[in-house]
Length: 322
Image 1 (cartoon, rainbow, N blue to C red):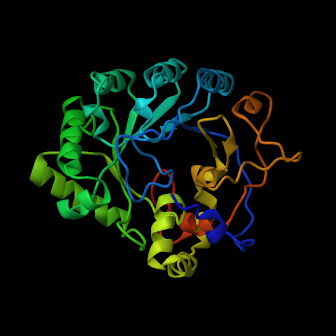
Image 2: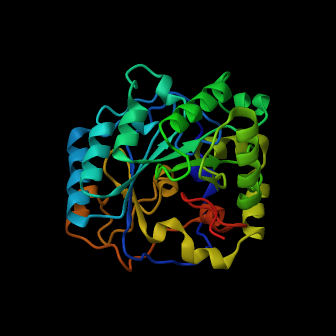
C-alpha cells in the first residue's frame, strides 16, 4: 500500500488551532485484522493483517476505564470482534456502566468462532454502529467484495431479530455511510429517510440512525486519489466547503484514540498518519499515561485532512455535526 503521508502532507497546515475539552470517549483500535478490504477504509484493514492488541495493553485499557469511568468505550478495528478478548472487554466495560460502541461491518458474524456474537452484545446492551455498502449491488460489491450486500442485509436482519433497531427495545443500531468516491456525503437527514424507507420496503429491516462520514484523503482512499490524480481537487473540495461552526463539535475535543500498540492520538485519522498526541518531551504517550494525566486544555494536532471533519455538514464518528 502506498504511503500517502509524504505526498499529502508535505508542509504545515492553515487549519485553525483547537484544544481539548474533558475526556468522555475512549476509542480503542483492537487491530487491523478484518474479514473485508474496503476501498474507503482509512486503516488499510484486511484479512492478511496480523496486528492485534496484546494482553498487557488491553489490561491497561481496562485500568483506564475503571479509573476514569468514561462515558463511552468505542471499539474499532479492522473488525474489532475478531480480537480474541473482544467479548471480555465489552463485558468488563458494561460492568462499569460504561456505554460500549461496537463498530461492525455486518458480515463478521459469518466468520468461524463468531457464533453467539449478536446474543452476547445484546445481553450486554452494546450499541452497534454498522458499516454497510450502499445501493446498488454492483457499487456495493465493487467497493468491498462479491456477496457483501446480501451478507450485510442478513446481518441486519439478525440484529433486528435480537431487538436491535426495534422501537422501544433500547438496543441501538446505527448505520454508517461513506461516499463511494471523491465527493462529500449528501444530507444526512435526507439520506437517513431514504435508507429507512428502502431497507424496510425491500428487506423488512429497521435501524435507528444513519451516520454520514466524509472520506479522509489518507491510507487506502488517499492512495486511490493519488492513482487517479484527484488529490488536489479533493483537498480543494474540502477547503471550499469548510464550515467554521463545525469546529466546536469535532470528535477530537472529547475523544482520545488508542492504537493496537497502546499509543495515543487525537483521532484515528491522526493514528493512521502517525501524528501522535502532542508531547512536551517528544516521547510517544501511551494508554497507561491516562491513569495520571488529564488531557483537558491540551492542543490538538491538526493537519490538512482535518478539513474533512469540518466540510459541509461536518463529519465525526457520530456522523454529521450540523
